[in-house]
Image (cartoon, chains in turn orange, brown):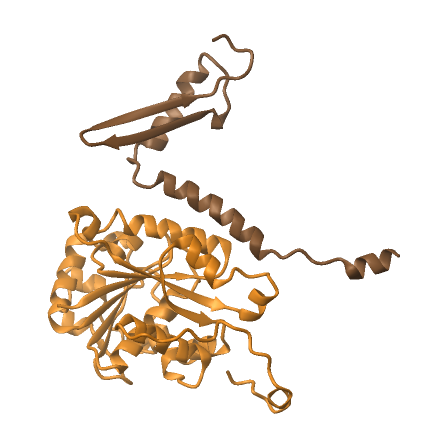
Length: 272
Length: 86
């Protein structure tokens, strides 16, 4: 039985897809059979971040509507064994996804995989609710910014009420906070919410903290999940996040501002 | 002197302001959680009915749904403006 994890946030542009791709890659690199599903029907992006956009033939909607088999739609990652991508459709509207259809797909995948990651669309409407409905765990991606934190709290409300676990009265979804685009310098100068504030307000456990990093854009430009950039701060922070997700205890990094030494300022150090 | 004051002036930090605003917003959002979907509509319609008789502000009405063991209590509080009969 696979563990189903939804990557969600409410607000758009906070790094859901980047995080879903990076965490899925990290899980697979650690030997777990992993599939990452794009639920953003109509505005798919995961295929770009994973670098497989030219290999998309069939998608989630095709599978649900019986136009293609699951094995035809799954894309095998070129870099990591054990990693598969199920892309979203670019053309159909969101109504094409049904709860029964999604359940069937997840049930089938559940037999073959260890982890199923659901990359949620932004918002709190149907698509986002469908992405979280069957989840066992949730990663709530939050920026240290007021509207993102508020939206994350809205999502926590939905996770506690509009999911299968909630409706059946089963154990609640295990909720994790993932803070992205964290800038320790701005936190130090008092112009960015610090991680303790965010954790206190949302009152869920912190699974990871990803610093604002040039490596993220560089990774998406190339279509290579940032986890592969193992020397970068963001790559390492995602690797730490994956370790915590599979139950290891890892100390928090990259949350304090490091003054650059004169030498590293003189001789580049531009690559972080 | 003006220049000196300008230079000495400490810029107000914005993160504590964000935190304070968020604490209020989130507390409000959580108080709405778990309420039946019809509550906002019920609140609006009740307000309309009351306004047929007394002019009250939007925030003059406060409804709460409390559940105990086997019964639910709908509590309705309306603050009437000063000087209205009552």
